[in-house]
Each structure stands twice: as C-alpha cells, then as structure tokens.
Length: 202
Image 1 (cartoon, rainbow, N blue to C red):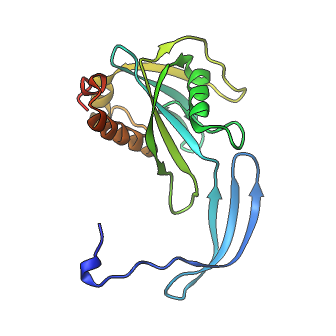
Image 2: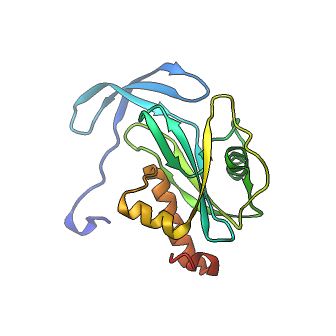
Image 3: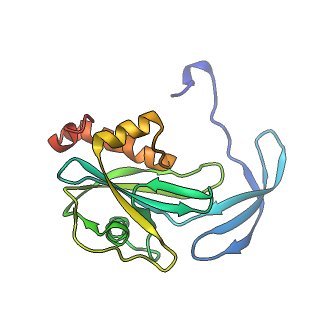
C-alpha cells in the first residue's frame, strides 16, 4: 500500500507548538494542542482524547455460540450489542487478565483457553488508545454477573450462524472496533486451522 514507485514521500507529522490539559480523570483526559500542519496552517485548539487501553473478548461456547452483551450507551442514546469489553482496573494490569475479569464480571462466563487476536486503533483522528482483542474458546457459564454500580448489562448467547446472518442483514449492529476483532478472528482461524473455528465457516 505504498506509492514508492511514483516518487511520493511520507506525510510529515504535525508540529506541536503548545499543549495543555483541560480535563483529566481516571476515565479520560482531554488534551488541547496548538499545531502547525505540513502546509503551514495553524490549528488551535486541536482536541485529543486520551483513553486507557481497551480490551474485548470474542467468546465462543462449545456449541458454536457467541456471547454478547447488551447495554445502554448514553453516547448514542440507545442500547448497544457488543462483545464483552472494558479496560484495565488499574495502570499496569495485564491486558489478558483484564479481559478475563471483564468477561466474568459482565456475563458470568469463563474459559480455560485464550488466544491473542491482535489490536487496532480506536479512532486515529481524536483518540490515542488501542483496542486489544482476545479469543475465549469453549467458554461456559460459571458464575452470576458481578456488575459495577453503574452497569446494567444483559447477556445474550447467539448461535454463530444467526449472529453472522443478523450482522449481514442489518438486524444486528455492533461497534466498529468489535468488527475489527471479528476480522482478526477470521485471520487467526485461517492461520491456525483450528477445527472449532473452521466449523464456523471462518
């Protein structure tokens, strides 16, 4: 994906002339920069939202089902179907440990077999963090939910083919960053040739 043979050059980064924080808490920080772009234009302020790293779990049961959560999301003003997701409880918490904890707390599901699927940027224009995706295989319900005070989450367990069909036909929508995790799942399945994943048509 380069134009090296066409005499092109790399796009230069912006020059930061000033930077300050207008808001900070444990969830996010808002950084407001004054920057000079390569053509000399000054942008001020240019806001960037700094988030902790995010994690999500593609969770598959022995019966070829996927575990989803449904939660009201105030940003869009409606309920959202998602992969179980979250962020480390504290700085330095291992990302897989955080993912296992989030899955158990939000759904009561757990798995002994986990694999790294990969990571992707969340929103390169305004955010600085990445979403790290993990695969839980042969997951089973082992406990009740253990939700935070501000969480109201419903767990859904869908047959994989129903899930794929509902996505394709527009009956179900999940966040774009979770679609990226499904692409990483497809890549992982084709690389490993795991029969449990190939049986899903991946």
